[in-house]
Length: 211
Image 1 (cartoon, rainbow, N blue to C red):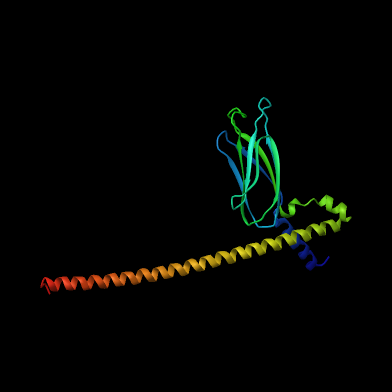
Image 2 (image 1 turned 90 degrees about the vertical axis):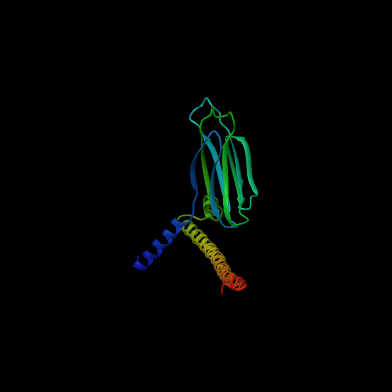
């Protein structure tokens, strides 16, 4: 294998590692209040998640409530008095998607409730076993297909970051322009007020025959 080919394979593997994959999160929900997790996700991305209570005290049967909201505050999932649950949706807008959990009153003996949350987005939501079976892929072909999906996900993420950077640059330029105009207006107002003060003082001193 040539050095160029090894470099190409290493680059692709590094790109594959950079792709967001499923993430397992452990939360300790207090008796009062709530714990939230959030992730910034672009539009048209599939999100799959499930959560379950992990309790070592079998004498208690704690339950929780869960709520998932979009960046615009739309309710995507809401469950109450459950020990486990799952949700799935396709994002319609870019931004922070927030999942909040809180313990139901009198179900946990005034103790913290431990929750395991498995959150998957994008390419991590694909069932590669089903895809391989349906398209009769195996071995190297399946790995290449995974890498193709990874590269595509990275490309979409780079486009999203580039567009976000362009939007931020536009906002920054508009803000700088407004600040410049505001500074010029403030300077002009100060000059006008100073001139009026000089005219007034001169008129006052002439009236009093001090000059």
